Image 1 (cartoon, rainbow, N blue to C red):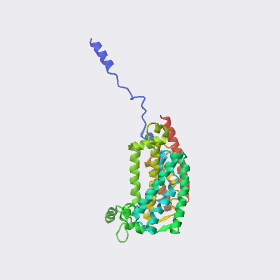
Image 2 (cartoon, rainbow, N blue to C red):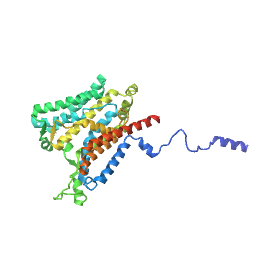
Image 3 (cartoon, helix red, strand yellow):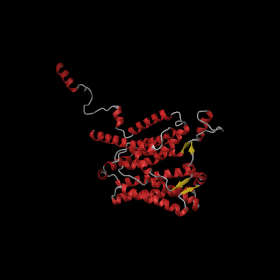
Image 4 (cartoon, one colour):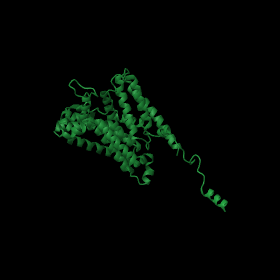
Length: 380
């Protein structure tokens, strides 16, 4: 009897498996990182920083004022690259981003100077019209079933032509100056789009001797430009939406397979139109910040920004075919742009090589993204 009970106990208590479940494959931390869409852009950023630290480390590029210079360039591009990234994940493109920047800038600048509007009203007007055009872009893409490349390419020319024609019609010039002085006096616009934030903190650091100061004792860098704050805010919000919400799942689903997404109840049309509207919002925000910062609007503003935004998104891991990407990665892509574009000025390298670098980065990013997509497909 004792032997029988021992045998029953041995049967009821199986020996623990050695090595865990063979059906579950354990991946190392490096492979896990390799599967992240933003990893290549993050690694590229580290490499770019290392190169310029060696070649321009003593030139002032990494002083506080130098950091603000290239961060500001990266922030402008980062704002529109976020919109481009989300739209590309959904499987669409918007080639009218650059023209929208010039058009929105004129809508902000002309009414206060020539029609007596308050600046805050012209800014609201610019956002409403821009987002309405974004809605029209999305509606035409859905309604006609034409590629978004074709529809938005048409609006690239339409908006650029309207910007030039309306500027000449109302102002008889293609550069409208003087709106900056008015914007400073507008409390709402000044608080949101003009100047810097954190002035008190930078003055405190100057008193402590931690940062460079002018002859009068004021800090050489007065604060963080608001375009950087807007970039950070949009980046955080868009990343959280994409990663943590149902709307983010919808965006990935629409870009992966629109028909399958529609069959499971995803509002494909609404998602795509909303993303076109958001892209237009980003372009108008870029234009508003630029007009308030520079103090003028020009008909040729935003030239080729649609391509730079797309390239930043691709460098950040977003696939051209949709369904895969990262807002964080697009921000890293924009950062690489800003560092290289301004950093070349701190070295002896001719700035004409910047475009060569961008082309090489785009090619490398596409090859790497294609490799990651194959790995993800094979692992399923």
